[in-house]
Length: 416
Length: 224
Image 1 (cartoon, each protein chain N blue to C red):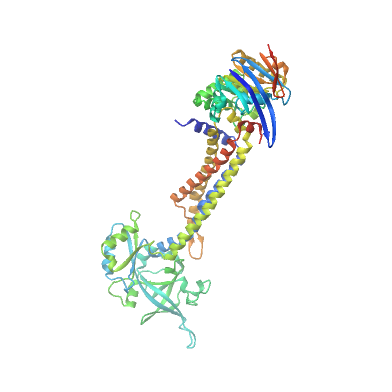
Image 2 (cartoon, each protein chain N blue to C red):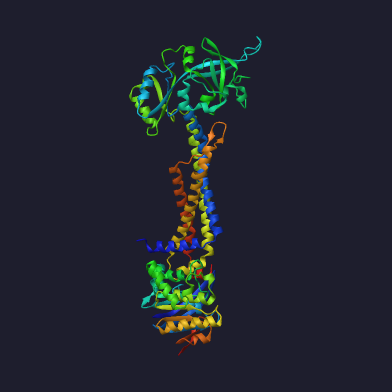
């Protein structure tokens, strides 16, 4: 059985809300929606800036788990066995292997005079199986000029946009780029002592440095250029299914002794430390903005309830005069506050998950280093809804309590 | 039923003390209808507020239905008002966001009646006062006379021991005032104890006893 004061408080609150001015109610709810958006969206976009970059690195480069060369080795030893082992692991969907070698690219050599400075750029050239690579990283979607590689392509290369001068907005000291290079341009590839003339087949544009600063060739040819005929590779990206976690695959590989030959990392572990630091800084900033939002919401509700209780002081006096307890009247204001907070949050939730999250997923904010999305994890959002409701209830209770404790007759007669 | 002894009420405003009641001895028995009269500022309403426990006297004694109210806490007084008193205010004092039915049902709900019982009792009381057709109306949709009738119904729906009325006809035209006094007469005939402040002789004459106040003291008493 619900206690009497709560029942009467609810009865009074329901009628007060039902017969309140529509404009006033709408305005309060509107303020609550804005507060909710302030709580969720500001920090969500801040974190989303980084999350967009994290997602892009995961999608286009590391996939869910990445196996790379140990720092004291030139490549992953026993790569063939490792790839076979990985493919057999439960939960592994696809695997792609990459050969990577530091190289120098040279353009304009056909017309260059002896006295001219060579037009060169350093790049990591990656030998890939185009089909497997694309199935995992989907980088063919990043092609902005020309075409992506196909199996059987020979002397064809795809360049990342940061290797080309026309795609660099601001000159970066230390970053050499190729000038006047487009689709069909022949360039020289210098790998160790080997020099080979290749044709630019496509240009990739990505905000992931590991794509934008790399050049790609078909692995079968690249293997022969770097003289790697033992099948050992430099990087293996592993895509897993939804029922498996990256940690499970990492641990399964570690259990099978893979750590002796390679470094195994989940996509999160592979993120640069600076990235993680920025994420935690942005999270802190988001929490700060949220706190300010909460204070604004609390003050708003405090003022609304205080003005409401003050203008209704006479009626509060009458309620007490006819025997309605102060506690029941306090509950009625608390219920009204809860109503404003819950309706405001519900509309905010609808706006966030029904419109803003899908909108930013489809139309990310174009930042130089990432495609910013709106990050609003359910558990965090509902925690903030809880915070909003609690702070609103407190902000609604205090002014009601202040007015109700005044002398009943003074309230009825409007005496101070 | 109600007894006051040497009741004193002094208002304090900064360093200024204003004595309004200067030692009133009064008693009303069960079923009695008493009118309190006096010129403006005589202390009529203040006296009523002390007896109805809406305000605390500066000194003196108030005993109601055998209970000394001096030692009661705020909550006990509130509970006492709820269970034993009905109050009719000069300006009706209906809650603007509640319909006539809800205004009457509210004190009944506060007495822990179920919603159905409270509404049923309130509806029956309103119908007895010829307000059955106005149950769903808000106070702003009622005339002054109708509002005061709803206010009386609210005050007596829970069958209080004492009905206090503070100038219940002050804001009403003659016809409405006459109807209100008919209701009071019927309530009195049914055994209701009524203590009413009024400044109108014609309505005071309907009561059994008239107390005249002046300068915070009872200066005369007429029994009918």
